[in-house]
Every structure is written in C-alpha cells, then in structure tokens.
Length: 356
Ligand SMILES: NC(=O)c1ccc[n+]([C@@H]2O[C@H](COP(=O)([O-])OP(=O)(O)OC[C@H]3O[C@@H](n4cnc5c(N)ncnc54)[C@H](O)[C@@H]3O)[C@@H](O)[C@H]2O)c1
Image (cartoon, rainbow, N blue to C red):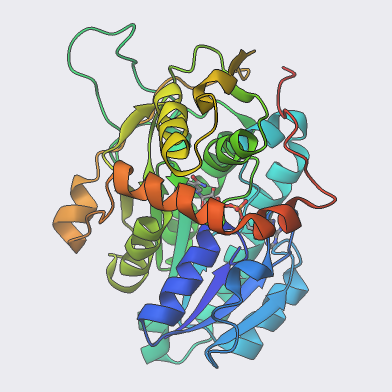
C-alpha cells in the first residue's frame, strides 16, 4: 500500500514511518508543515529507502492537500498532524483550533473528493485513519478521592474534554465520524494514552525530566505530582496504528493503552533511579525534584481499557513500563545532539501553560 501519513515528522508520526519502512513493504508519503515539533532528522534512517517521499504542506491548505492526493494516489491516510501539547494550548489555543479542527476538516474534504473518484476496487479498499487521544474523554476518578473499583475509558465513554487541546481533538473526532456517517467515507478512529520513547520533543514530561536532570536543573513536578497517566511506549503505539490502518473495521473506534497507570511523581522518581545507576552523581537526581503550581484544568487520571483492539486485532504492547523507560533514558543519553538541535531557537525548556 501507499500510505499518506500526516504529521510524520513528529514524535509518533516518525515512529510510524520508521516502522512502516523498516518492518513492512508499504511506501509512505509524509505530509508535514514542520512546526517547532516536526523534525526531519527523526527520519534520516528511512529517507533513502526508495519508499519514502516528503511533502512540506500545511493540512489547512486545501489546494496543496488536493495536489498531494492527485500526485501520490494513496491507498490509506493515517492522520497524525496536530498541535499536541496541552500547555501550549493554554498559552495559545488558536493554532490548535486551526490545525486540529480546520486542518482535519480540510483533509477530510480532500480525501472525500479523491476517494469518490477512485476506480471501484481502490475505492472499496481506501481508508482514512484518524489518530486521536484518550484526553477527549476528560478525567477519571482518582484512587486518592475514590473508593471502590476504578473505571477505565472504553470506546463508548462519553466525551468530556478539559483543555483547549483535548477539546480540539474531540471536535476533530466528531467531524471524522460525521464524514463517515453522512458521506460514507471509510474512516477508523483510534484514541491512545500518553506515549513516551525516543524522539520525543523535550517539552514533554519524560524528556524534560531526563534532560533537566543531566543539566543539574530543577525537575518541575506539577501540583502534588499525583496525576495518573497510562503510559505506552511509542513503538507499541506505532505497531497498533499500522495494524488498525491495515485491518481495522471501517466505522469503528479502537482505544489503545499500555496498562501502565503511573503517577507523574513515580515516573520522575523512576527516571532519577535509572540516571543514578547509569550516570551517577555525588547526590541523587531526586534532590532536583521541585513542586510547581499545577496546570489549570489538569485532569487527574487517564486509563485505557484496550480489550477491543486486543480481541479484534490481536494487538498487545510488547514493552512494559520498566523496559520502555530504561530504553528511553538510554536513548536520550545517546542522542543529546538531537535534543540540542531540535531545541535550538525555539524552546529552552521554560515553563509553558501556567496562566489560566
Ligand atoms: N503524544 C502523545 O502522547 C499522544 C497520545 C495520543 C494521541 N496523540 C495524537 O497523536 C498525534 C501525533 O502526536 P505527536 O505527539 O507525535 O505530536 P507532535 O507534536 O510531536 O507532532 C505533530 C506533527 O504534526 C505536524 N503539524 C502540525 N501542524 C501541522 C499542519 N497544520 N499541517 C501539517 N503538519 C502539521 C508537526 O510539524 C509535527 O511534525 C496527534 O494527533 C496527537 O493528538 C498523541
């Protein structure tokens, strides 16, 4: 298949493309605007494969998106392009509304017109895979304040987004479902929990903690650090996404999660323990932990029930949190030049999203 991947220069998109080129025979067209979060350096290992093409295109630009469809004739679209950082969405929600809502709408419209004109056999096999987040469901009861069984997000959990980011992703999910129901566009949606792993932009919790610790800088933990996320190693997510793109049932939604509920403070402490072992210092890195003002509207707990993708498509994660976080810390130790280059000029690990 020829797969059009949007946002392929980002954290998850680049993992998807590396997986597609290294482990399958599919070819890829990467459509990316290259915002601060997009780095073609994350793709150097696949660019000369002969099955990879890059288009620097904004998904909000209908004419350019149309040209890309006509020129490359994809069989499948995997739509990952988005503004993705909650803290940035608090500081400046406009870009999130533009890319995540208008961009998804623009891509859907161009996909629809391309799909409608395909020959019957290609039309029957075409698929538009929209990649979304568990944050659309809002937050779940937290063990500190809830007695009894703790619920998980399922594919039928009602949407209740809390941040400008999650609200824009929820909107895009609704628009994708409407294009399936109204126009019959063959769509499939996945909602995934927090990812971590190599090539993660250093503004997100795990790379920020690793890099600050190595520089001897404070490790800023929001609020009490007791917020729970369900962590999934990015390469496990990439494998799940390619499975859904190839085998997922049209019209369906699949939740993807790692069965790894951890409080943020546990994640930070684990990173410190690994660094204490790999790069020992006179004092433990834990002494750098600093509690800072919480994020406005911060969701307390996310956790995914991924029974459906396991039963229907046979996907389960390969990494445990312990194996994945160790690989991740090692990757950042081995790739500090990448970290330096992607931060140059744009982001210097300052606090984002503190203002309500
Ligand atoms: N990171 C997570 O933990 C997580 C979890 C679940 C779902 N998701 C979803 O997965 C997708 C990818 O997330 P990520 O963490 O890789 O994000 P990212 O911010 O690392 O990458 C986003 C990519 O999209 C590109 N992009 C942004 N605006 C664009 C536009 N207008 N036109 C074309 N390209 C544009 C950027 O240049 C970048 O390469 C997003 O849709 C996100 O909502 C992320």
